Length: 236
Image (cartoon, rainbow, N blue to C red; front, side):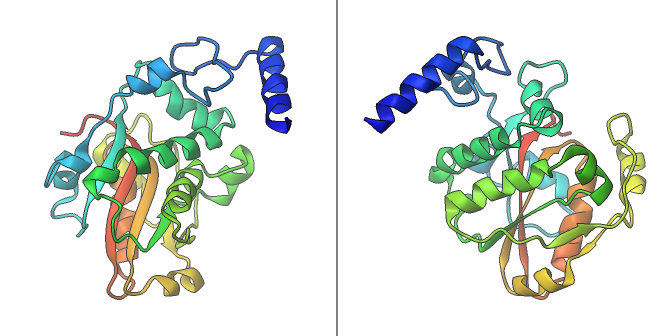
């Protein structure tokens, strides 16, 4: 009975103020969460996790030792699916990202990508950006995975200084822009010795931020590092 009442109230709310799919702009049905069924089915999956030494893993070869790396879907500027990242980051919908990463765990189960992960952590956000935005979208993504896998989320890294936007910078400029931005969260990082850690971010473009953060995590004794991003630009 309570479920029926809740469904009725949700349906009434959708009529008064329709929830819209961020990809196609169509109104969502009462049983659709953040994306409509059609756009969710057409999500441009990378399926990197199904490919040994995939493009994303090749991208980090020789830069930092990692176990595995994957991204859930492709990001292309101007694509309707780019609005997912924009909404998660700037439009106060980080729970959409958390919902998507929970789905990613199920979608990738057959690949065994998440097997033997001991803990999940996220690329941190500087306190000035955190105060401005109100949340770290990468933490929401990481918590979605941790909850789905029933393993701990641990804040292993800290951002000690803000950096200018990376959007219009090339690979070398991005690398220089983030040097010295991050440190280990000493108290929390000590819990990760000997663990297989999944490092999570929202999108990979040049991989400079992930490289710096993964290198810091590798300084914890006997750690293994894997990488996950919600989206990936087409990597060279």
